[in-house]
Length: 141
Image 1 (cartoon, one colour):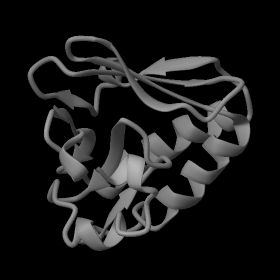
Image 2: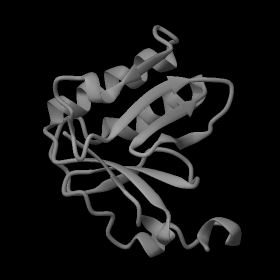
Image 3: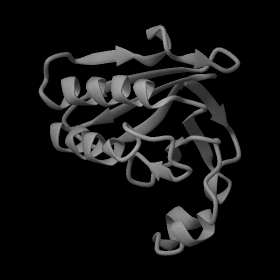
Image 4: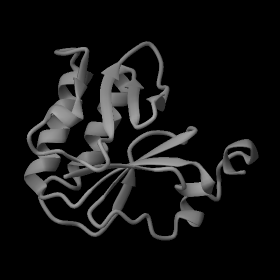
C-alpha cells in the first residue's frame, strides 16, 4: 500500500492518499483503526508498518483525540490524522468494503478538511466534483 501526499487534491487542496494495495493490507489498516477506536493504542505511525510504501518519504500518524480534526500537516511531508473514538469507528466501517476484494471504488476516510484523506485502489477519486458538490462554499472554494 502506497502512502502519498498530493498538494493538488480535490478543490485544489492537499490530499493524503493510500493506494495500490491488496485486501490484506486494508485489513491491517482496519485493524489499526479498530485499535484506535478501542483506545488500545494512542497513535500509530503508518510509515513504520511493513506493508506501507511511503512515496517521497510521506509520513502519516494516526491518533485518537478529543476532536475529529482529520488530517493536518505537521511538517513538509509529515501529517497526522486525529479522530475521536467515534471517528475511528466510522473509519472501520468505511474500510470494511475494501477488506475482501480489490474494489475499484474509492472512499474518503474523514470529513472534508484542509487536507483530504483517501483510499483508492488506483489512486483516483473519479467524479470528485460530484462527491464534493454538497460541501459548504468555504470548503469547496
